[in-house]
Image (cartoon, rainbow, N blue to C red; front, top):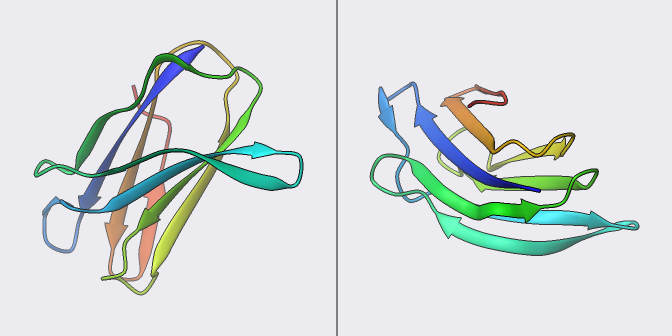
Length: 104
C-alpha cells in the first residue's frame, strides 16, 4: 500500500494555488466514500493527504479539487492504484483548462 500527496499550480498567476480544498474518496460499489480532506498550503501542496501504507492496491480513488476561481468550479481526478509506490498527483490550472499527471 502507498501514500498520496498533491500539488496545485496556477499558471495564470504564475504561483502555487494556496487554500484549495481537496477531498479524497474511494469507490465502493457504485458510490464514493470520503477518506480524507485538506487544503493546500501556501506552496500549493498537501504533503500527506494519506500517509504511506494507506492507499489500497487495486482500489479506485477520486481527488476532488474545489478550484472555483477558474472556468471550472471543480476538478475531479480519478485514478486506480496499481502499485505500492507513493502516489503524487499534481494539478496544473489555467483559466480555461487544466492538466494532471502521476508525479514522483
